[in-house]
Length: 121
Image (cartoon, rainbow, N blue to C red; front, side):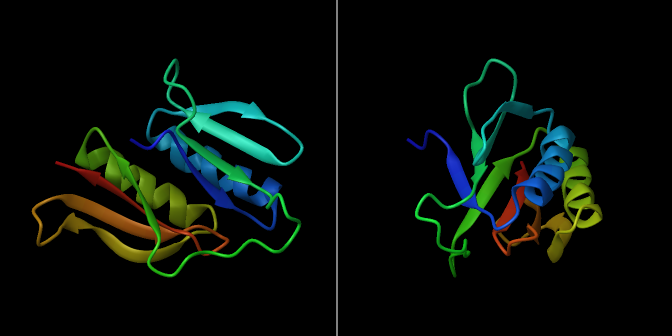
């Protein structure tokens, strides 16, 4: 069972603006902020996601073949999350729509290149 997912960033302020927008589209919000990390979750749900400056001080990089998937409550939330990602510095990796596996999904990369998607049944 995954407790939370953490992505590295090169620019915490820029990442915060990006993730404030997409988490708001999902009904989540910032739950904590430190000098090196920002944490997000739905209210009373614990930490679900964090964005952080790398602990070792090296530049943050994204993983090839690595992706975080967000479970949305509706197709409208998938659409809103994808739109928020693109409006806040993300790049499109697949517009919202039904995929071959039958799920409604949208894909994007954050400003640091991390790949994410949102799905709804």
